[in-house]
Image (cartoon, rainbow over the protein chains, first blue to last red):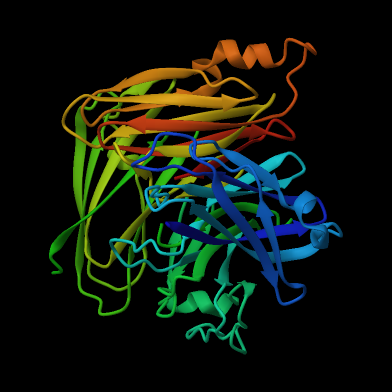
Length: 228
Length: 226
């Protein structure tokens, strides 16, 4: 039986809500076979919550509002939490590794969408997160640790302790982080960039994202998935 | 100089009058070696209108305005826009950043599609939102693909043809006008509808989705998805 799993994060805070979209597809089967779909959310605050979703079918896109599906999110007091989605075919024949999963963060009518990292997908080329900052926006590094081991990340003094198992953190590097990077004048302002060496993230249950925010309102403007 | 590997990325580049595009070349610091990135820029009709080579000899990120490379780019649908193919040495990543009036948007890599790997994007159909797909043909032969919209109980399909190395910026609300207009007929007003688009191609195509939202003060907000 083929199983595929994705790791990412959601936000459920104030006006910001999360919707998980998924498109189960197969390169070798065209019939709308039923699939098993398991969604887990996790954070240091509430531990791990699991939902088994009925009715998922091959080639049928679907989405789920996470605040409606997980009562623990109803209070809207979760600036960030981890998520995993697992799809399983019922027979060995159905290869579902081409399926795709997206997160959508909705805030007062504006939407930010990003692709979730598939756990077993091995990128053809290694990838590292690129962080940047200017007078209008800044970036957070989001580290999703869905594994049962803690992670120690080197090179970020903002991380005083290892990241616990089954948790997620968003780190805004301090201004001096960019001193070792590069700064350029663009049409908008001076923009600073710096990459991070990410040794520990080839683990299938870990994922990295870079989240761009407005410098004044802190509103999330975009998210990119590292290594996809 | 690091050997030029097969790392090839594709980007849709939007330019005047909406965007100022920048190329970000990111040499990864581990075991850094000077690297090359070859840029090929194609008009929507697939004509190569410019090519360039960027040599990076320091392990620091480079940010380069693409505007000087686009002077020969044709204007199509009121905008200069093109298909960028970036071929980089091993250990070098390339991103594009679009600067618009109110914000910047970092473009990740376009999604690759082929016969066994369809494309898929969630979308929202509502007033003030425009959903666009930038479809780029990565081959030297004509490409054909099919777009299927899933909204409500409808799933209409259209076929699109792409010139060799060419691109097309598809406005989904225009392409599926009949279905989208039908959504608002019962109430006389278009509410918010969740939809999905599936892209199937027998040839190799790269795709990015661009969404334009006008939420407040007529300042459009652009977001991109690869």
